[in-house]
Image 1 (cartoon, rainbow, N blue to C red):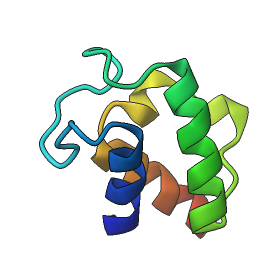
Image 2 (spheres, rainbow, N blue to C red):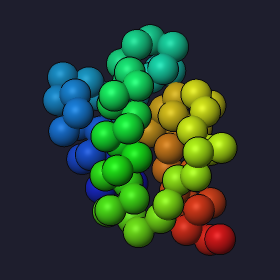
Image 3 (tube, rainbow, N blue to C red):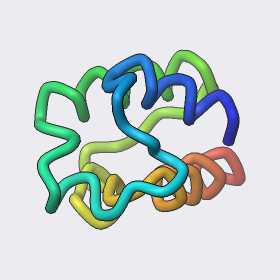
Length: 75
């Protein structure tokens, strides 16, 4: 989770992702951020996020992104 928080912080250093609310709903992450995040997650965690998993629910918080990474890592 620490690595994920580092990736998120590199996108928006001014946001406390550990305590942030809905990242999509609040406009913290936009579509370009999501693309960058997916690339970084794929490279860092050696998982591939399929297109069908790129939905707002999976990117609404650091916890939901982490849950997605763990799910994909188990597959």
